[in-house]
Amino acid sequence: MKIKKKELRKGQAQLPINYPAPDVVCTFDYDREKDRVETICKRLAEVEESVRDDVLGKVPLYLKEITYRYIQTASAAAAAKKPQAKQSASAVAESNNAELSKEDEDALSMIYLKLSYGLFYNYWHSDKPLVQHATAEKIANLQHSIPNAQAADLFVKCFLKILVREWMKIDKWRLDKFMSLVRKFLHQVIRRLIAYKEGTKVWEESIDRVIFAIQYEVVMESAVGLTMHMCDLLLDELMKSGCNDDMFIKLADGVAIYAMRRGNFVEKRVLDFFVVPLTNGILDQQRDD
Image (cartoon, rainbow, N blue to C red; front, side, top):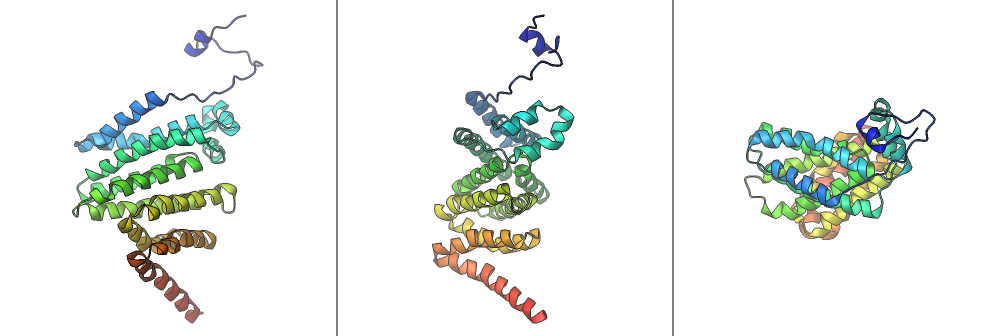
């Protein structure tokens, strides 16, 4: 019995039970996706608050969808072949170990950069304090919707690149709210790293990628104000997150201590807001013991 592909697509026929499962091929049309993400960015930067909130609520699903289509490993193919009920429970865990090819990473970065630009101006137009707080939380939590560690780190890198690029355009009336966004974003980065199993390859590589992103996109790009702000809040966010000693040492050395190489204001800020409070806390604990 012959079965036409058109009938399979329309659900008018199905393959026999013992028929081998077809190969899952991840196809991607960059031109079509570029137009799609540009449309999303335009709506993210709309003046109307209702339009901005509506499209911002759909961004997590978009990030999840586009990342799944880029994963071309055996684990992603196996997850795609599972029934929908099982896929929702186990697909994220399996895709965390998937590695993106260099071509996929380059294409994803272009999409993430465009999306980050739209997110920046979405937050730019948020005015009232409660709206700003809710919007900052949504933007900071977007990385959790990406079901792949490498892709999530790439999104962090792209978002930091846009922040650095647009930081000098922020006026004095909007500076405080963007500093609050940086705090919330960094906090969620640390929380996401904690969620990975300690000592695994995914955990170690993700920490290294985040450190490299901060070093390369923020510290090395002459973003002095943003660098000092991240050094100001790093110790506080590390303590609030409850991360383990290994992660604390890696992030402290890779971000705060590394930033001291800039010298001048950055070095003094790290000493005043990271090194001195840390050493004072250690001395106080030793006195209590």
